[in-house]
Image 1 (cartoon, rainbow, N blue to C red):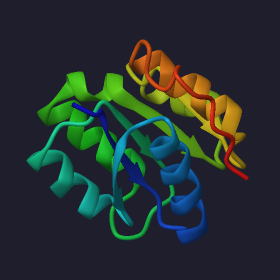
Image 2: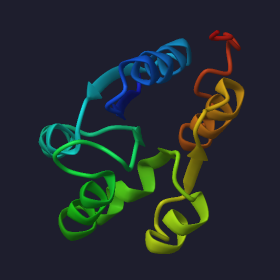
Image 3: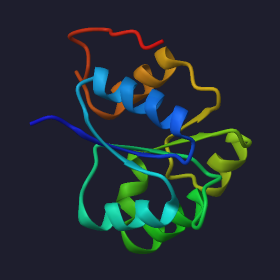
Image 4: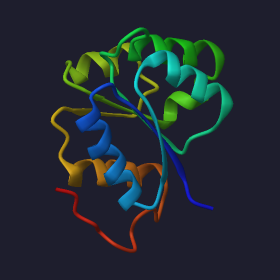
Length: 130
């Protein structure tokens, strides 16, 4: 069974880039364009990894994390924050979030980080995404 990933990002170009990287790593990818949709998707399914932007329409990424902290705190361990904001501050506010990346995301760095969540994931082929 292939791992499932959720990309929570409102910018279509960034959505496509992140999804392409995850798909190249062998994941099935769902996309949420805002935090409200992300909360709905997270309530219906489980994900091996969640790429979560902070600045989102309707419901922010921090509100998504607060929702998870209140309802399913273990899921926060599967979150990689992908943001243009201060990564150190995000880690301070949400210490259970193990990983955070600054935008723009370097594909090789994201692939390496994703592999931390699922041992052996994507190790068969290192596919470059332009």
